[in-house]
Length: 205
Image (cartoon, rainbow, N blue to C red):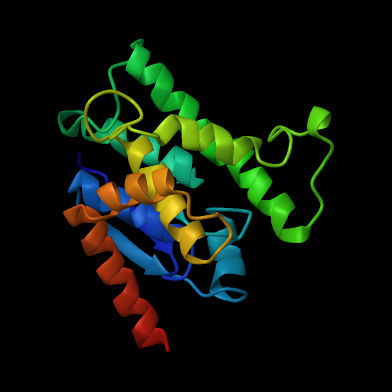
C-alpha cells in the first residue's frame, strides 16, 4: 500500500471506533484533528465530507465516511489480518448483516429514542421499541464472534457501540452485552486507540 491513509477525527466522537479499526490493521496513518462547529464545518473539510462530521478517511483519491464503511474498507486493505470473512461465505453474510444492522436499525433507533419520537413499528426500520436490543441480545448471547470463529471488524463495531452506549446509559446493561463488549474492548488495538483518544481529549481540556 503506497497511498497515505489520512484520518479525520475528534477524540470525543464516533471517530474512536474508526481509530480502533485503524489500530487493528497495523497500517500507518496520519491524523487530522478537527473541532466541532469550526474546522469540522470549514470549506476545506466539507470538500472531503459535505456532512461536516467525523470520522472520515482519505486514502489517495478515495474518501470513505461512516464507521461501517470505514471498517469494511480497512478490513479489505489487510486481507492477511482476516478482519473480514471470505467473500461469498456464510460468515461473510453474517458480517454484512450485523454491520448494516448496527449502522441502520440500531443507529436509527438510538436517534429516535434520544428525542422521544419512535415511529410506528410498521414504518420504522427498527421495528417496535425493544426489537433492536432483543435481536442484538439474541445475536451475541453465548457467542465470542458474530461472523465465524475469530475476530472480525463486525465484532469491533458491535463491541465498541455497546460499550460506549452502555457507558452513557443509552443502552441497558444486559449481561450478554457486557460479556461481548468486555471480551473485545480489551484487545491491544482497542486499548491503544482508547489511550490515544483519551490523551488527545485531556490535552484539549
